Image 1 (cartoon, rainbow, N blue to C red):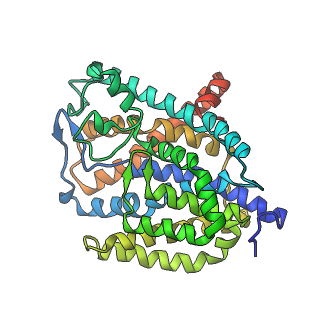
Image 2: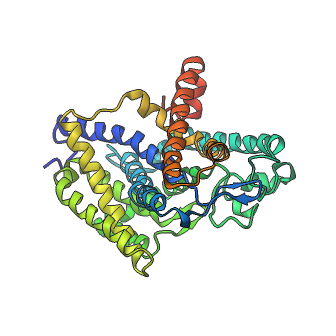
Length: 376
């Protein structure tokens, strides 16, 4: 049922609607993931210790570290599916054509938005150095040419205390890793063509063994979920049609896994629960969305879908400043105050992002399309 995306127009339409619908809520999830109060440093002093706020810690963990963890893997999955979508034969010419298209949709926005954050940091460190800045990172004014280049790929070479290998616009590690996977797409295509689902299973095992393996441009999560999406597309399988009937089974299993992740937190094998939760959550998110879209109960305004990339691209640094500003203003010392800020901070950032996107699209339509990779 719904296995071939060429089979029925209605199936293909539901597939397209589901993918478009998911873009905005997944970006909302990403913003909430980055709404982290565990290390809010103002004037070199850590603001709060979350150990003292168990209710807030549990709720924020539930959403930011469990439920919304499916967002990035699902983005990789969709990217893999769309990369090979309706590609009858993946020749060298087709590969070059797709690479050319990704220069516009991925590379140019990647360079632009990292450059914007570099400039943003320079201005902030110049005019807010005694206020909201943490004071722990190397100042942009002291950057060498090598530092500037590393800022577009891996800032841990500039600030060795960074534990993660991220570009200066940190959420763009997703775009960076996606570009690397796309460059290697002929190899993935060959493996999937020859080994079928076993190629995806092999990459999945690597991800389960080390789900947090991140080297600059290379991560187990990117290769596994991109390949999983590619598998459906290469074999002309409509993943929405396949996953939609699993709504109730995946919902029940996902609930049990979420409970287990809370109960067994801190155990040596918690990562296996995490991986099972992400995969089950992915199935549930797709099935749930398709179910209500098909019944015409859920729909997403095109403006929200089109603006989702802008929100993703701009949100990280403004979010940090909004968090620090509201912490300075509210001075939260209760679970209720922290929960209020946990909702307020991402809401403000998303609303400002959509507003900015709308204004820019109206005043500078071509420029807005350019910096959003044609997502207009």
